[in-house]
Length: 177
View 1: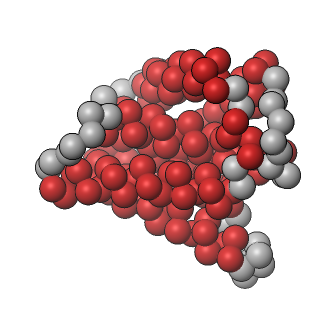
View 2: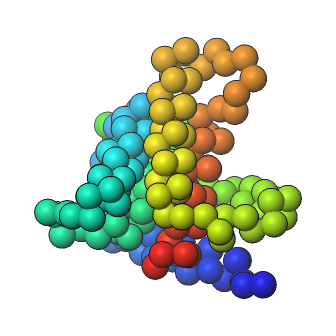
């Protein structure tokens, strides 16, 4: 069996490196984003990936792999924004942003390990197209939950969907570096 933990954290390290560099370039401008806006950012990245997968053609140089890393970072931003509640037009200290990033990586990894145990690493047999479609479904679920003003009957919450999005993007990166 492959070392899922090691593979997982190699991908996370790559995504976090991008996150920290953008944090230096832009600060935490993303703090103004509401959960719906974060979901939309993930959605447009996933739709771009799907279009490239379907057409086998792209006109912008950013690779599909870079888009999946962006999805990972936006999922963490979504989780951070969910915790902090009110979007603000103010900077979050870089050290606090990194602490929250690490916190949500741990939350996502812990859930992945539990699911991975129960599902027997079934994701290793999945196609990149499936991860893309599942990410799109999860973003649409977030948007629906928000439109229902969070009054769902039996569904997981917004945070659970951001966690699944992150884990699907990590799985894709492990299988398709």
